[in-house]
Length: 439
Ligand SMILES: Cc1ncc(COP(=O)(O)O)c(C=O)c1O
Image: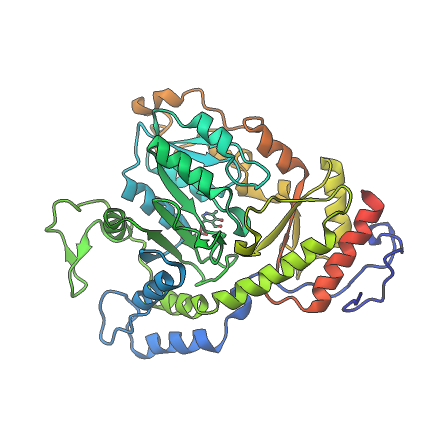
């Protein structure tokens, strides 16, 4: 066993109790693509700046960065259509518009998600209905089957932390019940299941390129779909509500595509950054997956330490290692002890956190949901007459027992894309040392 900075002995006292820490140098920042921004990104951005053409649809010397990004994205992952947009949050709203979700509809969402999943549904005027999760930390197919009802318009499944739940079952349920499947792949770029890329299982899907994601354009997102009709509507939605002609000018003439757009286009600068990052996805994902599974395999079998169920480990993007401890107090103490052993990044980073600290990822941590808040004075969508069917839906803690259990005793380690051998060794050593004392 090696250590980056401190000679240590696994048998010594825990650092939290005054013993020597496993390491004293911070782990690298966790940003997978962000850590690898370099000359390739600079070169493509320079081309856009030199051409004075930062808008994707026209300009004096268009470099077609967003077009190229979308084309290469489809080639890499097998999506029929990809549309670069301004963020993952915008992408979710675009999806609601593309599917025509509105008052009178409910969209089923897992209790472990991101606030943007809920806000997209609520801003569309529809009602989010909570579904529990299972040991995959993704939607529980049994609870999903129970909750699909006459009002269900779509199921939004979230591939949390780089790996999807049981997509064969989930997509089968949606198909047989006639509801649309939306894949939120914001945290899972580069992931797949049994050889099929995420985002190809559902009717439509989204990705994010915010800094914490597999690749980044600072802010950015992608809408993907295999369906031509949804793509056409998504293109109009992300723009001004209409199609564009071959010169990139708005074309309002098609009566079948006159919508209300949200102005969430991707700029050529974000396209250039995204394109350079997209080309690095294989390297980023293989380094994260390799590091994560080396850590996990070294720790499997440790009494009291359990790992998230991953349906197809070979398709895991490796972004995050999720684990559980026997109970809430042990979980809190375990994470504090790991931090004391030096398993933490630079100030402001989130290397290890308890699930309770994971903020707006949990349904019951979202005050606007728990209290059914509205952006408008009339209290919509909760007060809309077409949504009266949902009057007794509850969103406070206690609504989903599976979520509440995993939230109370779960934790996660963000996996860096630039870990050295010594970083991995130190993480394993710290887990073993803390487990020996606390479990
Ligand atoms: C699951 C999930 N969906 C959607 C989003 C929204 O993406 P963005 O931050 O690009 O708006 C995020 C971002 O954190 C996410 O984690």
